[in-house]
Length: 506
Image (cartoon, rainbow, N blue to C red; front, side, top):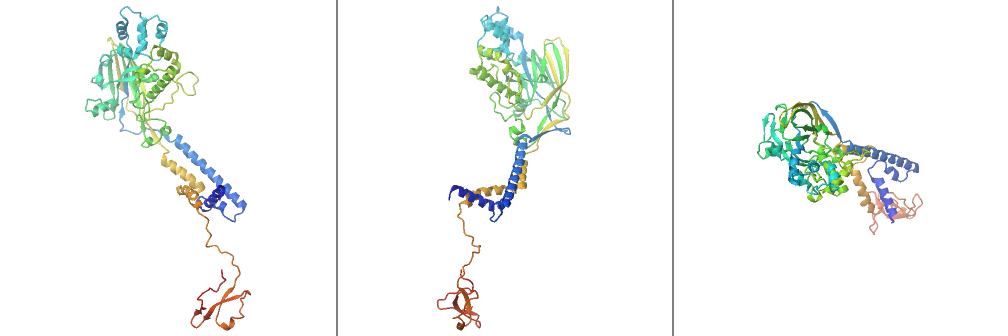
């Protein structure tokens, strides 16, 4: 049997015996060709309809599995105060002192600006390009991260006083040093406070609800800083929105009132893929520059890879970077020359120069808004800042799963059952028929009635005197097998003992 004959026979067997609707009418013997064509057309249309519905269900499962709703009826919800990062912005006193130590008392004042660009590097290096490249100044050539650490204030010289809800606390015990791409910052976060609580250390309860007062943080700083508001997983970075940055200036006291809109995730959100929910949880991390995922950390990682690609080195402030990867003065100039492509973000469809990063937001990232800002002059050469939660949230966003795996199975199974009468066992049948049944040799049908050839008719007679000239009614020869004795209801057999029925012999 050829391979084509084998395949044709297997298909015919499956069509004739399978459970899918309509196929047996195509394979049955004795059907007119027009009837076969009709059923073939109907089956094809049914399969097309089923396929289209299944594809639509799969597309909806992949791209529209999650919906956002706004909840306004919750009362017993805890609201976390945002993480607060204090990042040194401009400390000319420390720069001047470090420049005197490095270059001597009688040094060119442009070296102060060079040192400032190195310490607070954000992608541009005007003074380095103008004065160091030409050889006019004896500028530092490498080890810029060490220079930055030397210039920046330590924690105890940055903070004067800290208070939470009017109660003072040790600033440097709760504000932890954090590496960011804009340099070393000091961060107060709920995550750090949980760790302190777990280790039985004094901690700050940054939770606000209807049983506790509203969150309020007071800071007194020695230097000008930028204060970043962000989630626990996020970090300050070049592209932080200006609405999330609070400016702390010397001789100024500022009061900020903020509002928070939290995001809640339904219990089934984690079961979806990252592509389906279009966000990542902090523990779903793949980044080298951070130990947990966040949108800001993803952008920093994206910038790091692009810096390595374009300049073969990274910024000396890049978090978790290896020392051999950090740029020397030539690398800094390369980053400066490619500032538009490395520091400014743009969308995929944008036409201007910029950095394209395919980064998803965090699934737990809340939304912060500054409600009011108050500012006043103070005589002290310091910066005072107060950040207050304006009110408890009256609404929150919730991410719900509207198409889970069970919904997908029900939808696809319903489409297959509606159009072609298929079930899970129907697809098992396909393998069964094509692997096992197709190998069986065709058997004769024992129930089929064949055409009988005319042979000697067997009759039963009651008297041997009538046997000699007996013919059957069809004029066939008669074969005598025995004499029937009606008195004893018994057939007398001949000597050979063979008993035949009184029908045509097969």
